[in-house]
Length: 322
Image (cartoon, rainbow, N blue to C red; front, side):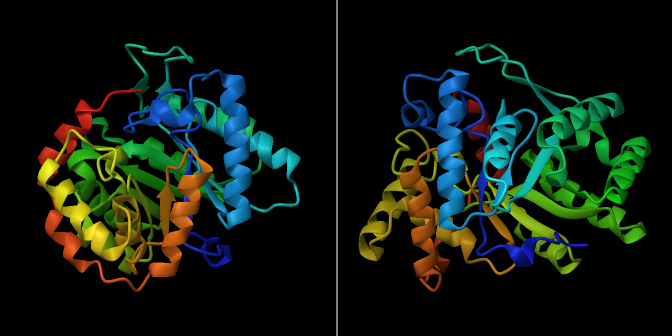
């Protein structure tokens, strides 16, 4: 059962709130984009403005999570003040935000896929978002927690589905393909999952065939981290120098930035239903929407920049919270 609100979206672009709901994130140059004042009050104003601007541009899907700081609270506050504006909300459970707005915290989050934690975080999500949750996802389902083999968790998710909330997962790391296959297996027995949200970009292409298979099975595909947390951008001066240098040459010929090429490359995939923008500025949203004018631009050559998955995820672990 694919996401039932997809045909109501004007385009494939959604806004992820990971970099807006808490003061620090692992995107390159995140610190410079948010400014020096990272108080909750300031981020609330920034997030309100970003959600409002994103909606005005045509974004209807917003992606939150319990671990994204106050993302659910910010989205809820915007919705209460804009009751005439219909949006669709996805959130996630399975991670807890621990930094408590402290900058340079040693520990930012912890993972917990237990049944008790599911119940706790679901109650919290319902408190903030009330009846606005359209999609509830297992956050970063991986083999080590065994969450997709936990029948009590699955039964609880089936029960949540009966309430009218669609169920999904997000994937991460080297387990992505195994988790995608497990979702397909579960759905063949009794359909539970409506969507899979995975990391997929020019550098990390390893899950493409698995995601295409899932789409053929009627599961909607949401793509995150299209910019590889800033590594696929002109601001990247540390990772994959040769590739970035080569891409800059192509960007001059095509009159498109590296960021636009990265976003467009995913946006063009016919099996992708939603591409999440991680924008923290209105200019970035403008750039994302500008890509819609170039959907027929030939970018097949970008496939050559695929990295080995182990190298991709190793580099991701090196990124600093800022």
